[in-house]
Image 1 (tube, rainbow, N blue to C red):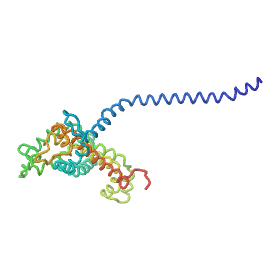
Image 2 (cartoon, rainbow, N blue to C red):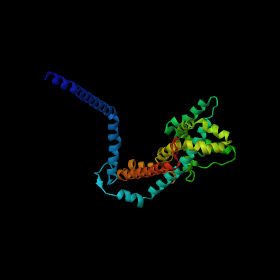
Image 3 (tube, one colour):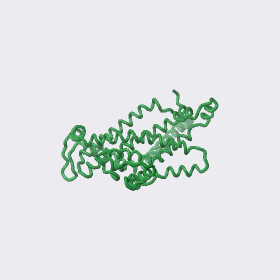
Length: 320
C-alpha cells in the first residue's frame, strides 16, 4: 500500500506541475491583456467620444432639420434630395473640388518626384538643400495663405511684378474668376516638401545593383527611370496618391482665408461650402448631409485606387 501511494504521488506530480504552469500562464496572459487595454484606453476613449460618437451623431443629424436653437425635426432623406436636385451650389462646389483635385494631385506628384530625384544626388551640402525644400511644409497654413495673397496681388504682387519686367501684363489671379482656381492649384505646390520626404525614402530603397546591371546593358537614363525607378516606386506612388486625393478633396483653408469661395463661386470648395452651411447659415442638418456625401466620395475614390493597385503596384520580392 505504501509503495502504491508513492507511485500515485510520483505520477500526479507532473500533472500538478502542468496545471500550475498553465494557471500561471493564464494569469500572466490576463495581466498582459489588462495592461494592453489600460495603456490604449486613452486612445479608445478619444476615438469613442471625439470620432465615432460625433460621426454617429452627424449621421442622425443629416436626416433632420436643426439650426442649433430650435428642437430637432426629423425630415428623412430631404437633405440628400435637396443636395442632388434643389441646390445648384452643391454641384458648383463639387465641380470646383473635382477640377482642383484632378489638376493639383498629379501635378503635385510629378513636381515632388522631380525635386526628390534632384535632391537624391550625391552632391556636397545636399542636406542643406533638402532642409530648404522641406521648410515650407512646416510653416503654418494661414501665414502661407496670407503670403500668397500678396504674391497674387494684381498691382503689387511678386508674380505680376516679375512678369512686368518681361513686358507681360499679369492676370488678376485670385481676383479673376478665370484664374482663381488655377492660382490655388499653383499655390498647392508650396507644400510639396512633405511629399519629397516620402519620395526620398522610396528612392533610397531602390537597390543600386539594378542600375549597375542596366548600365552594363547600355540602358539610357530615361530607360532606367521608366523600367527601374518607376516600377520600384509604385508603393510610394500609391501612398502619395491616396493621401493626395484625400487631402485635395478636403481643401478648405484656401477658400476660407483667401477667397471666401469667390469670385463668382469659382473657388467654392465643397468643404468650405459645408462650413458655410453649418456655421454661417446654421443649417446643421443639411451640412451634416453634405459631410456624409463628401465622406462617401472620398471613400469611393480611395477604394478605386486600392482596387486598382493590384494592377500597377509592385513590391520587392513579390511573385507575379
